[in-house]
Amino acid sequence: MSQKLELISFKLCPFVQRAVIVLKKKNIDFDITYIDLSNPPQWFKDISPLGQVPVLKVGDEVLFESSVIQEYVDEITPPSLQPEDALLKAKNRAWISFGGDILFAIHPMVTSKDETLSNEKKAVILQKLGQLETVHSGQTYFNGETFNMIDAAYAPMLMRLSFIKQHTGIDLLENTPKLAKWSESLLALDFVQASVVPELPIMYKGMIKHMDGFLATKLLD
Image (cartoon, rainbow, N blue to C red; front, side):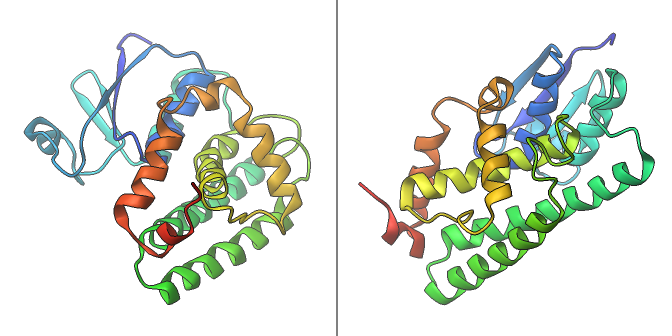
C-alpha cells in the first residue's frame, strides 16, 4: 500500500470503530484525527460529502460510509476478512446492514426523555437481537471459529450494550446466550479493545447523563 491512510473520527461514533477494528486487525499503519461533530472544522465540511464520520482519506481521495471503508481496507490488504463462499459473504453483508439498524435504535433508547419512546426502542432492539440469535453460529464468532468482517461490524454495537449494562444494570443480551458469548469473545480481543479511546466507557456514561433522557434515571453510582 503506497499511501498512508487517515481516518477522520468522532470518539463516540460506533461506525468509525468498525473501520478502526479492521485497520487494527490487519496491522495497517494509519493516522486518526478526532473532531467535534457538534462543531466540525471547515476543512472537514469541505471534504465530507455527508458531513458525517467516518471519512477515510487516501492521498487526495476521500471515502465515506463505514461499510465501504471496511471493504476497501480489506480489499487492499489480503488476506480478506470476508468468507470465501460468495453466498455466505452476501448474507453477512445483509446482516451487517441489519446491525446498523440496531445501532440507530440504541441512540434514541439511550437519549430520549420520553419513557414510552425509550421503551419502544428497547423493544425494537430486543426483537432484532432475537432475530440475530437465530442465525448466529453459536461458536466463537458469527460464522464459526474464524473472525470475519461481520464480527468487526458488530463489535461496536456489542460494546455499547456492555456499557449500558455496566452503567445502568440493563442487560439487553440476557435472553440471547449466543450473542452474550459472542460479545464476551469479541470484547476480549486486543485489537477491539484498542479500537476506541481508553476513556470511552466513562465518556459513554457522561453522554447518557448529559443527554438527561429516561435512561439517565437508571444510571448506577
